[in-house]
Length: 447
Ligand code: CO
Image (cartoon, rainbow, N blue to C red; front, top):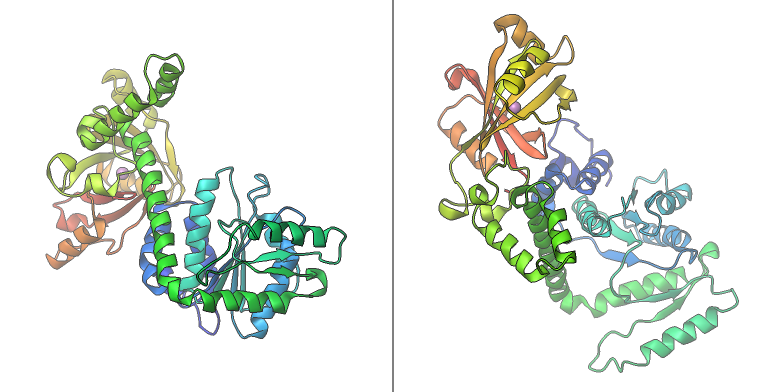
């Protein structure tokens, strides 16, 4: 995480791999937001991970986790290792991991460039937190730090009884022993050791580190298996999450899920029938799944690839963007005269525009209203008057499409995609290559 001069213009993944702390912080925010850029970043750095040793630390509130983590950081640093901490506190939905993280941070390591500490908020969603903290650990791994993931853990490999000087500590040790004695740990299997610490005084911390190292050595041979098991868990979990998201965004109509729950509650239908129906519709492809739907906000990879019943491989028209000088007059035409439904407007701060989406079959019309005098839309209207501003084509692999266009000599405004509305990736083709029209390419999340 040190000794590199960060170049703020370099792609984020590159800066993460060089250990630029700002890039690491930004990258963790992206994975925490479950943004498409976060997923893209994980894709880019994943091949560089697997070097860090991940240690999970968990325990009841008041067990002294933050002090213990603080002492462990010091011990790792003495060994010349850099350390990243992802502090997660699922027990406090309002403060998130902030308290745990701040407590660790407030102690001695803030000025140390070899220590990176990050708190993660829960936002009341444990599944999202588990996904985000795993990805955050990957980011730290890519940046070349040891990752300590404090707060959540699945299985304990080492038990620590902290505050060992307190009354009751021996009873705690005895009860863990009793629990461990239920298993014979035959065949050389790892038997979790119990380490007594007094973190405030630093007592027992070198012993704990030694046990972590001993565990690492003991399990070195099975590292591949454990990584495979973790990969299996991650893929299953992500697949389920993405599929459910796809169902909500692309398959179910507005309010349908709630109706379904009502019908199950009143015994009009049963959960198996309901789920079978949703799966059948999900596999039928986007057109059949949601005939009145507009642009897909989330497109499941498997359902979007290839031609035929699983989805279009060719670009499809997503929407037509129209620059308007007077949005009230434009709405009077499109909404009141034509009778189209207009979605709630969305502000795109970076462009100083307000977009009003009007679904029209599989596509949509986007009315673009400038919100400031220096907005590109204001300039466009001043120069050319209101009218057609851009068309947007939906593609299922924006990078492949851009590469193909570039190879064919098409003039691109963006050679790399950037983040667009509704969690999408977008890129623009120059009007000089598209016969006078600005063409936007758009790829939905996960496609
Ligand atoms: Co648009």
